[in-house]
Image (cartoon, rainbow, N blue to C red; front, side, top):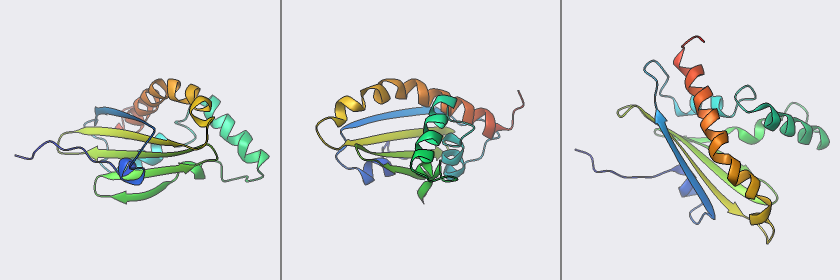
Length: 151
């Protein structure tokens, strides 16, 4: 029997996070076990809430980076059963590890954040407060999309 253990690419990349959250959900019966597919689906423009994808679009237009609006949420690395999404911004570094444990039929999402500067903790407060609800909705949408169940 395997001993319980917890490891994540998110925590390996930011070994001393200022903030972390973990979500675990059930892997649907007919869903893919590819962690990169789960990560791409979680952060696709269709899965992100409209207010968030609109904010990303506006920011990319202001920076004149058209066509690259979801590049910030691209899968950077895949190791074993986990994919890593990393975002480095001016005030915060964020790593999201999306893991799929096919043996136990679980999907886990681990977020680790490092704040930069004095005001970053205060600036990120609304993001941290809404992250739990936001990620729950994103995981639910990804479960529906990747399970092949029609609505």
